[in-house]
Structures are given as structure tokens and as C-alpha cells.
Length: 123
Image 1: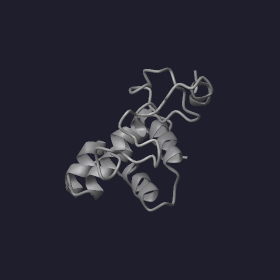
Image 2: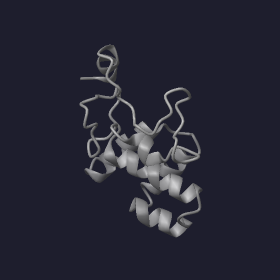
Image 3: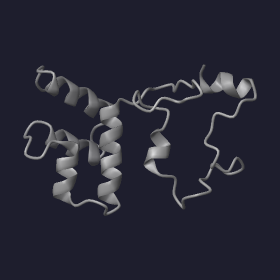
Image 4: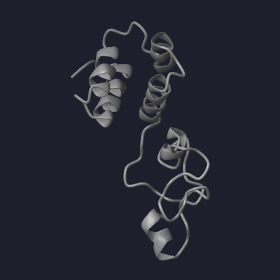
């Protein structure tokens, strides 16, 4: 069942800690990335059966969450590269940098990384 169907049935598909009036998190000053991707990835499916319009591949979610940790100062640059598992990878790291700079969509990055990891090489 998708979110639209749940809303039609008057079922609440949202987190219990979201303020229904303004959509803001009532626990954290900024809604955490893990909350933003919850229910969107295969490894974190919605327990209510909601189906997102676009499933976020686990690898893409991992890259995004690692990016937030790096930007927030929780990890340094070397840990950032290690977390992503691409430290010293001459083929993948430039693609990640392109996505960070907004020169490539994250979905395109995910597709290209998958192709490289599965032996197809770069496009």
C-alpha cells in the first residue's frame, strides 16, 4: 500500500514525532538524515507497507548519510573516504566529487558506481 492510499484511508503514514501542523521534528532541531531516508530504502522498509515513488538504493542512502556526517564535522576527510569505501579509488572517487558539487545526480552516481563494482567499467 502506498502513502496516498494510507492517507485516503485516514491512516497516518508519518513518524509519530513529526509535528503535523508544520512537518518539523519535535525531538531534534533539524530532522536527522536517518529519519529522512527511513522507509525509502530496501534495508529500511516502511513497517506500515508504504511504498515510495522512488526507492532509494542502500548504497545511495549510505553515501548521503556519510556526506551529512562529513558536513556536520562528525568525521574528517580521510574517515569520509574510508566510510564510503573508496579511499584511493581512482575510478569512483571522482564521481562522488562530481555528485557533491552538484554536477551529477545522486541516482546517476549510484548507477555508475554499481556498473563499476559489477565489472562494467565507466560509461
